[in-house]
Amino acid sequence: MTDSTTTAAPAIELRGISKSFGPVQANKDISIRVMPGTIHGIIGENGAGKSTLMSILYGFYKADAGEIHIAGKQVDIPDSQAAIAAGIGMVFQHFKLVETFTVLENIVLGAEDSGLLRPSLARARRELRALAEEYELNVDADALVQDIGVGMQQRVEILKALYRKADILILDEPTGVLTPAEADHLFRILENLRREGKTIILITHKLREIMEITDTVSVMRRGEMTATVKTAETSPSELAELMVGRKVLLRVDKTPAQPGRVILDVQMLNVTDTKGVHRLKDVSFQVRAGEILGIAGVSGNGQSELLEVLGGYQTASGTVLMNGDPIDLTGTKSDGQSRRARGISHVPEDRQAEGLIMDYAAWENVAFGYHHDAKYQSGILMNNAAMLADTEEKMQRFDVRPPDPKLAAKNFSGGNQQKIVLAREIEQNPDLLLIGQPTRGVDIGAIEFIHKQIVALRDQGKAILLVSVELEEILGLSDRIIVMFDGRIMGERDPARTDERELGMLMAGMTSDPDKVSTAEIEENLAHAGTGEKV
Figure 1 (spheres, helix red, strand yellow):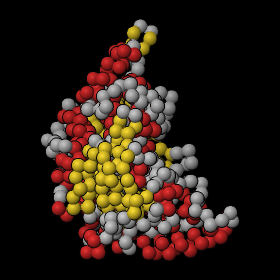
Figure 2: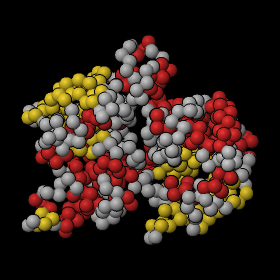
Figure 3: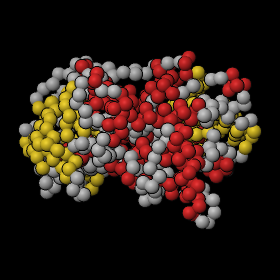
Figure 4: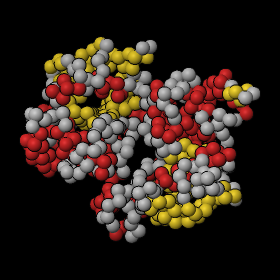
């Protein structure tokens, strides 16, 4: 930071902010100062109060107590329009775009000059071109949002804020759905914004990102601000301990695998979707007892369809053997119930859409799919008391917080929602665990716990098929790695003899010598992987 930055008034100063939701105090007397022209990280476990604090700053919530100061002046922010008027923009984890509108229409929406749309669109097009050149935020103004990737959609959200003259940008978990190349490009955009004097607040649980991009980092734990430190003067291990309140192992601790017999044998698997697109193309592999097979790839390259076929809710052609016996792939006997009967448990990629019914209680979610088990039956009726008791035990073993089986799934943080799904599936003692994106949107403490559960299951002699877009997770957990691109398997690698660069090349559909390919070429191909575009 420059001397002028350190002597200027804070771009944002929050003083004594408190907010409660019924008996739950989300923020407790929080004070924080964010200096202009800096990138300020805010980290903490799920449920630590980060998003609540930023929602107060952006006018979604009204604080019970405290003051907000912008550029040295106290302001009242009763709603998001007031936040925008104060020069604050927010890019949410789940984008707020109208998918059937064009990029240009989304940027103008809510910020029209008058009742006449055409002049507003013309002015927006000129400003969009200038902003794109200034900040490396190139987008196709006339593309429909539904036709562009998540990385491009995020650029649209940033452009929306800049079009509204935001000097302060809040980004909530901005890399949660991005490829490594898209995340790197986002960081370059943030660097450009900082150089132009913008102030950025970055909410994330990824310590690598904090160390790479921020100037200062504030740590929250259980609704309180526990520390604010210069990023250059701290370390990932120190930040992890501040977040969780104890030392956290930042690497996966496991012994070498002892693979046994073949549990899952997949041969020449093919899937064509309802639009006639070939999603899986002659996919073949095996998973053995006592090993973790990791599948790396950019989202949209067939991994989801593979899990859907193996999980029982997608038809396919080819052969799948489970413990040597064929599995029906035609749909006549192909469903989740039949898969569970064969010893297959499934933790889906999207816990909220596929793993839980959000309005239902935890005990109901834990029983889903297994409600016919004898332990849950009382004659011809289901034994709700047994389900409640079983859920309480699972919550204790998996450290679900709060350990309340009657609480609706939607009222748990993302990490605790994931633990509920894991508890349900792992505790069934499966021969094969299918697990997609096990730590997406999960904080550092829960990541450590989830990784330990996966390794423990492997050490019990179970077979595990792991799908993750996090290369660090794939390299740390897997005993073998296969890489998918455009519905095909590009190759298999030993985690001990490969690295993120080589895997990135395979994920981009490139099989050349890694030393002969530039990083820019890899990033360009990765940016198009999974979109159906030709590079």
